[in-house]
Length: 128
Image (tube, rainbow, N blue to C red):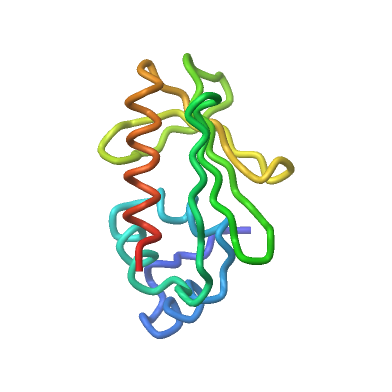
């Protein structure tokens, strides 16, 4: 089965898709390309108030929805053999995603810079 060429869809169809997908899906889709990032930022459903919770000790960010669901991004030192590489806030970063645990690990040489980059990326993407 081949992948759906989402960027080739008419803009009205794409807008409807981006308005109905959940936060767990919005973030990974936004990492696909700069074009997808801008489309997600422009057309995602902004009616729900999302909250970013920062844990500076464990270096993780939780994105909480009004209904109590959350998506977690953790900043980890080192790398992973199973990680895929994405661009986050101008940095090429390995990530491991887990639907089971509602989040993903990002691997950085400098964890403080990683935390800052994750916060800037999510804040910009999810701002109204």
